[in-house]
Image: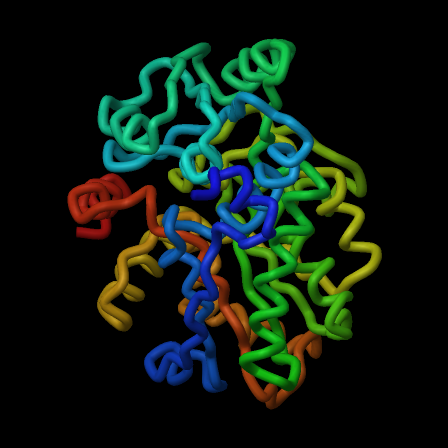
Length: 337
């Protein structure tokens, strides 16, 4: 019987090929065919397993004996940070111990979720930045490797698989690709994927929420900008500084950086639940708001998008950080009851 590491050497990825389905409801709203790439059905509940899984496999091949990852807690008690869950899952599959570092005050349910993946959980600091410093310190132990949440070339390389799947399913390039930006890892990976399959001309609509808009702030400033704090409810978009590679991508690809309010993101979550019977987190709601808010139509009217695109693809990035009670609480907080 082969060990997990021997199985890893075969190169079998930890992610699955996710469904790409045309949405009648969102197509009606947008006035054009809208396809949904359902990354929320990944084994870890988000696209993160593509990149983080790939990175974990690569460091395991080089002799890593312990994985450590810092991850931001979500705004809900039902789940933890997507990066931490992906790293813990990959470590379990590889048969390698994992330590996930989270800020103090993280809910008991978050800890239980990660421990369910057999990870050790350490609670350190008041925010992700402080937890990340602890993770970097732990990674100095012999045989330990730090797995960053988004800022690593091998993570971006892992995300390329998503675009390969789009090419196989669609054949022809879409008129635009919509995604949410947190730390910028998905944007960097998708951009690399578009270049690989010859779709580098496809516009990317990069969505953020106000208060977690580090990419938009960087685009406007022409340099990396560190937000003083994360004030958005979309905690899974909560990087204060975007990856440098994400900003570089704006010079090489057609990327439109757009920001919506929390209310628009949460409204999109509710509408998507009603339209597609699928509950996703507010970070994903930011991407869906590009459809529901009429943003696509505005970009078309301004001449940025093709007047009659063959299709638009929205990456449904994840659904870990939400449950029915949390959605109701968010709506009440925003006065949407």
